[in-house]
Amino acid sequence: MSGIASSPVDPFAPDFLMDPYPAYDALRALGPAFELERYGVWAMAGYAEVEPALKDWKTFISGEGVGLHGMNPALPKPLTLQIDPPDHDKGRRVLGRTLSPGVARKLRETFQREAEKKVSELIDKGTFDAVADLAEAYPMKVFPDAIGIRPDGREKLLAWSTFVFDSFGPENEMLAASRQEGLAAQSWIMECCARDALRPDSLGMMIYQAADDGEITEHEATHLVRPFLTAGIDTTVNGIGNTLLALATHADEYRKLHHRPELARNAFEEGLRYDSPVQTFFRTTSRDVEIGGGVIPAHRKVLLFMASANRDPARWDGPDRFEVERVATGHVGFGAGIHACVGQMIARLEGELIFSELARRVKSIELTAEPRRRLNNSLRGLESMPVRVRAA
Ligand code: HEM
Image (cartoon, rainbow, N blue to C red):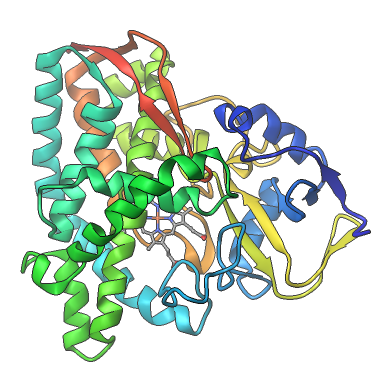
C-alpha cells in the first residue's frame, strides 16, 4: 500500500469529460495526491501540488511520455514535449527563438488584419457557428500562414492533433473515433514539414535556418516544424472557443469587455484559466516521492490535472466565476517550468486580437442553441456553438 488515498473515478470517461469540474472538486478533497484505481496510476489535482510538480522536471520527468502509456521505442525520439534535459534544451532553444516576443510583434499586423476581416464577415452574417466560423477559422488561417504551409487540406490539421491529444489517454472510444482520420492525415502533415513545402519568409523556414547554421540537423528541423502543427492549432482553437462560450454565457462580463476592449488579452487569459483547453498531462516519477503521508514509488505515471489546479479555491478567489478583469497570471493552462508552452506568445496574440476586435465591434453575443461538446482525452473544447451577434 502506498498510504495515499485512491479513487475509482475514470477521468477519461465521457460523462466525466462532459463536465469535469464537480469531479475535480471531489478529487482535490482526497488530499495532495491519490491513486486512480482503474489505471493503476497516481494523480494530483490541487494547485499547490500540480504547479510545483510541473516545475520539478527532475522528479516528474517527461521523457517517458506525457501520456498514460510509455514512449513507443519504434518511433523517432521527440525533440520537445516528451524529452528531458539536456536533450530537451536544443530543440527548445530553436523553437523559443522562432516563437519569441519579437517574432510575435512582427506577426501582429497581419494577424490584426485577418481579425478585422473575420469579424466584419461574421457581423454581416449575424448568426453563425462560433466554432467552425470563428474559433477554428481564425487560428487555422493566421498560424498555418505564418508557419508557411499550403492553404489546401488544412482541415487535416485538426484531425491530426485531435488524434495526438486523444492518444495521451487510454484506448477508449474517443481514441478509437479519432485514430483513423488522424493516421490518414499523418503523411500530409509530414509533407508540410519538409523544407521545400514551406514559404521562404516563414516561421517554418526559421527552423531550417538553424539547420543551415549547423545548430540542428536537417532531420531534426523537420521534426521541429511538426510540433507547430500538432500543438499550435487545436489548443488555440479550443482556447478561443472556450473563452467565447464563457463570454456568450456571462453577458455582464461581455459588456465589461465591450466597454473596455483593452481587457481582451486579460479576458483570454482568464478563459484559459476558467476552462483550460489542455486539461491534463502525465509525468513519470524518477524517484520515490513522499506526499500526503504516503509515497508514490519511482517509475510510476502521475496524472497532473492542470485544469483542476486552475479552479482550486485554495489558490483562486471564487475560482468558478469567469471574470474578465481577474488577474489570472500564474494559471497553469500553458503548463509551467521548462516545458511551459513555447507558443504562448503566439496564442496570446491570436486571443488578444480576435477578442479585442469582437469587443469593439460587437455589442452582444448570445447562444441560439445548446453548444455541443467535442470530447477528447486531453483537450476540452466544442464541436459547435450556434450564436447571434449584434453589431455595436
Ligand atoms: C507546451 C498549452 C498554444 C507549442 C504546452 C504545454 C501546455 C500547452 C499546457 C505544457 C506541456 C507539458 O508541460 O508537458 C497550450 C495552450 C495553447 C497552446 C492552452 C493555446 C491556447 C501553442 C502554440 C504553439 C505551441 C500556438 C506553437 C507551436 C507548444 C510546444 C510545447 C508546448 C512545442 C512543448 C514545449 C516543451 O516541451 O518545451 N502547451 N499551448 N502551443 N506548446 Fe503549447
